[in-house]
Image (cartoon, rainbow, N blue to C red; front, side, top):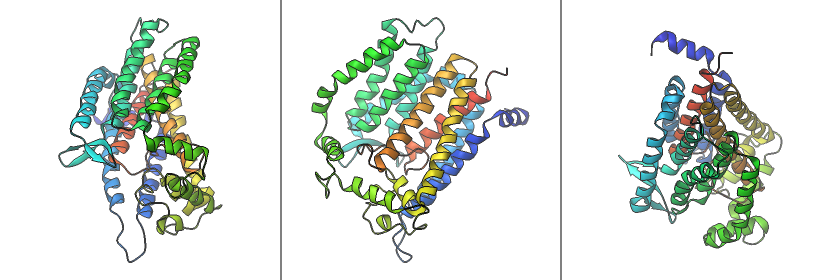
Length: 370
């Protein structure tokens, strides 16, 4: 690609997405540093340094995919899907076990979580499948095959176990089916079948997963066990007030009431809300709003059905993560372990999110010129 093409792509790109995702990454790194801070004399956790590296890798992937025609990426969707399934099987066979779950593979001394890339792979292959010319999305066979595509990685991820990540595949699948033209009647039937299966799903949950749901329903059930993180997160968010306690001065975080094992990951929004208050928390929401609006704009402007479906699925995936994570930290949903995009500590999630946004940016750059 020559300089003129790069210049033309930059001019046509969505700069609100560029700036908002950069702002979110910088804010995330700053508060991951804060989540590891204890005092001026104590050493700070090195999480923020690794997050800087992963943010740079993710940014490189974002730029590369934004400059690459999304249709070339979609052409390789089935290969990406197949490789992801192989990695998910390897996780079950030889994955690194942490806190009773095998979710990571060690590749060249780097810990990789394949389930994060599986979400992107499912979004791409479903879009590719449903956007094929002549595909009859009203035929039950088409719908069942689409569900099978999502069901295989869902089962592998749930087996790790990582039910929170597996559940993300559900809204991705529903959104792609809806945007792909599947009739509402069929979607309503699927929703009814899903609700009927909830009692069976409850029996399949692990003890700690049931405890999280029961604590959500009854906050006083286990305040010093399963309910501790939820309670401390709500205290952190509520104590921030309008403008917060100040950077590096969040007592819930610094004193360790909000456990340092989860503060930089699942509860990074709680750290921000405590130290920067409602103003800081609202600013983060506004930045995420810009990212989501950019994704919707790309879907509306897409030059073909393939681009529209990819943009819808990736934007929906990010929205689901943001909604569930923030609702979880303020006590509106059970603790699920879903991280906050672009801000929570984690290399695989950062890189996969940036790759997805790069594809969305590519769709917008190559939008219909009309």
